[in-house]
Every structure is written in structure tokens, then in C-alpha cells.
Length: 176
Image 1 (cartoon, one colour):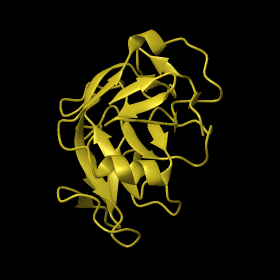
Image 2 (cartoon, rainbow, N blue to C red; image 1 turned 30 degrees about the vertical axis):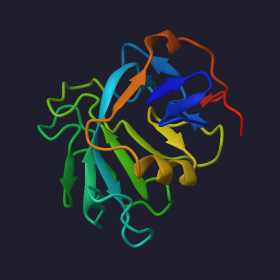
Image 3 (cartoon, rainbow, N blue to C red; image 1 turned 90 degrees about the vertical axis):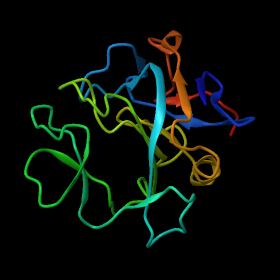
Image 4 (tube, rainbow, N blue to C red; image 1 turned 60 degrees about the vertical axis):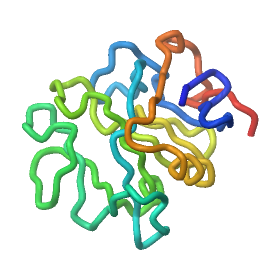
């Protein structure tokens, strides 16, 4: 998979996608709103079993107490954790559909360095052109298609050449 100005290229398709509100960066920091440049790998696949069928045999269900730690000073930083959990975190089981299906990347994982960014996922977009906090977001249909084909270790290249390029509110230009 390769992020390009035309969208996310994967398995012979180009899919429109949204990226971080601050575009792509080679110097990712927690909370900067940017998508990190580099070569990443798919490290996990999470899904909401109450909302969709298992998208691939290796997918893990998201339960009511599943969270992701985004507290740089915590030993669990940039790792899945379970409620109750006091440090800063994101709920993986959301009321909206954004995390119904999540491809987890290995950005700053498993050996997380504090402050280098957390929870860099591929997930469903709110709507075309709506930026993320640093993730790559796609339509539900494209995300389901991708999850059925990607496996653990699938490469995701986010070229540093995209850093600093203007994006239209986080949308990587692609035909809709």
C-alpha cells in the first residue's frame, strides 16, 4: 500500500482517502494532527462484532472496555489497554462508526517513544475530505475491501515527499 497524491494505492486499486489535518510529516509528534511519513506495517485488525462480520480470520473483536493509551508518560503509551484506565486514552468502541473496522499500524509500536505519536490507524472516514488526527481514513466499502486483502505485515508507505504538500482539508486528491 502506498499513499499518493491520487489516493491510497493498494492491491491494484486507488482509493480516495483522508489524512491528518496537518498533512504528512517526517517529524511526527503526539497531537500534531499529522500523518507520519515512513514505511509502516499493518500490525493488527480490529472490528466491532456487533456492527459487522469478521472481515478476515485474523481480526480481533473490539469490546466495550477496549481503549488505546495516548498518554506519553504512561508505560502503556501507544498500546491497547482495557478499562478502567485512568491515563489519557481513546475509546476503541465508539458511538460513531469511525472505528467499526481498524487496521492498526506499527507507527511508534511496539517500542513506543514518548511523544512520537500514537493510535495511527487506517479507519473509516466521517465523510470525504474530512481530515483525521493523523490516521488515514477511507470509505467503509473501501476499508472492508482493504481489510479482506491486507494481512499482518502488509507494508504501508507514506512518502516523505508528501510532507509539506498542500492538502485540501486532509483529503488526498483522488477521483470520487
